[in-house]
Length: 302
Ligand code: PSU
Ligand code: MN
Image 1 (cartoon, rainbow, N blue to C red):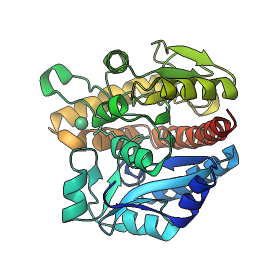
Image 2 (cartoon, rainbow, N blue to C red):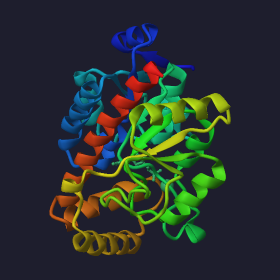
Image 3 (cartoon, rainbow, N blue to C red):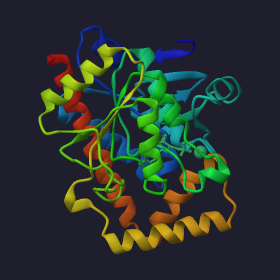
Image 4 (cartoon, rainbow, N blue to C red):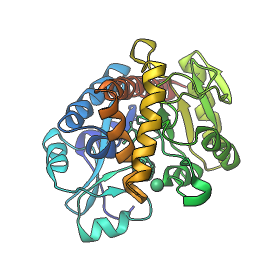
């Protein structure tokens, strides 16, 4: 891939067939309040290591897609004012024009795939927004999942979305949704949306076998590994329902559109819950990084 730069430790790990997990940077710059993002990124890397793999945090710096940012580089990215949020459509333009950007799930999957990394951890994938029948706002994450064979460990999709239509769309696209120790698609801040996953897995070597088998089928799609937030960190149901309807209402009233919608909703959730939503978000990010590390390690053994 043009303008792809793989950091030395990541390249070495890949050459030696050691497990590697990709991490994104939009969550660092747009998904969490500053300076929490950078600290969480470091914690996620530590969780990948604890799971048995090598982390590769991905973002745009100096006109290149960098796979494996150092702590200093991550700081530099986070300190950039108005850092652009990059998906598949604006990747080339941002590379050429600004040279710096944070990668969403979609762009991170593309970079991971070209670097030879098959496992990726995020918070929640993007999906079909509520009201999409009018706005047509559907995340490019779904486009990437339909086209790029990388396994994405997530706590479902952000519950600010229309989860039922998101799950329907994943099915249409032929993207498997595998539950890690759960039957139901998680709702990000809550453990269950009530929607079913394709299959529940309780054993990591079996989950790895399902991932490996799907990739070998060569359908070309990605895979969603749904990992609910740990019970102790789940946002209380009442707080969750109330904050979410208010957040959706505020963002609608302010006329936020396009790439701004998801960061605005996450920011409102954080404020309306007095930080509780962010604590849950951080807990699920760390848990996903840990599971992704374990999955990458199991894939090497399978
Ligand atoms: N998960 C989080 N926080 C985030 C995101 C995911 O816990 O901020 C980001 C991811 O980078 C994802 C993006 O790709 O939100 C989706 O944005 P949109 O809905 O505009 O496609
Ligand atoms: Mn969108």
